[in-house]
Amino acid sequence: MVFSLFKKSKAKRSLKESGLGISRKYNLLPGRCYVVEESPPDVSFDAFTNLINTPDAGAKKTVGLAVTRQHPELVRQKYGLENTPIYWLATRTGEEIIAPTNLGILTHTMVKFIDEHPNGVILLDGLEYLISNNDFNKVLRIIDQVSDHISQSSSRLILPVDPRAFEQRELALLERNMEKIQIHKPAQ
Amino acid sequence: MVKILVVDDSEAFRKVMIELLVKVGFHDVTEASNFEEGVQMFRQERPQFTFVDMILPGKSGVELTKELLAIDPETTVIAMSSIINKTMIRQSLDAGAKDFLLKPTNAIALSSVLTMWSD
Image (cartoon, rainbow over all chains, first blue to last red):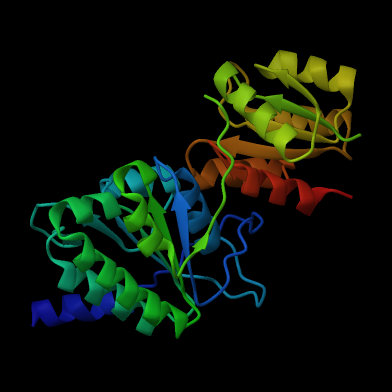
């Protein structure tokens, strides 16, 4: 009984952020997947938080789902995320943690989110970690599966990748159905 | 030519910002590292845009925003910070800042802000 009440209240929880009163800076089109070649994933997180904190052209709020290698509490603090679900890719047990080898749960989590929030945005940070724990082709298949769902919805996927961690052929396969967010890298 | 002032206590960040601004087509950029220098450079240069780090040594970015807008109510102030602190962002917007940029910023976000708030 207690469990079912908990499940119910959790299911009803709003995933919307309160908004910041700032402008939308990234024009990420519905039904598209975007890859960002960068490390650390600053532009990806900026685009993700900007989308979920600003209304779209129809004045609707966008809800987000983040899957990341970074600890969720640090992500919440840095990006001011109060209601957005954040899943931690880690070899630990617990709620809102996904083991890197559990690609089935990871795919299910993202596909379910797309089905429930057709105008949402998913940030998948930690692709390198997934590939270091799995065969590349297996990871590619889940990206393709999620990408297919995205293209049949109005959601978006943001996928940061560190190009140094991939062979040229792997990068080409990953990016073949995606649009690239081009970033200028200033000299540090 | 559009004049821009960047106020941030990090010299490295100012350098990156100036490089990005040049990349997106804005070449007339001056810089300052704190409240006092910011006010002095603002009076001297009268920029159309001022990017203000919300956390400055001494007086804060919110106080600087109020001061700059008291000098010239027509200027556009954009707040910046390396974290999204909703309270601080609201304080900046209430003080008159037009928008917010998360640091480290990039050419896409910077270009978008400048286009959005250009006359």
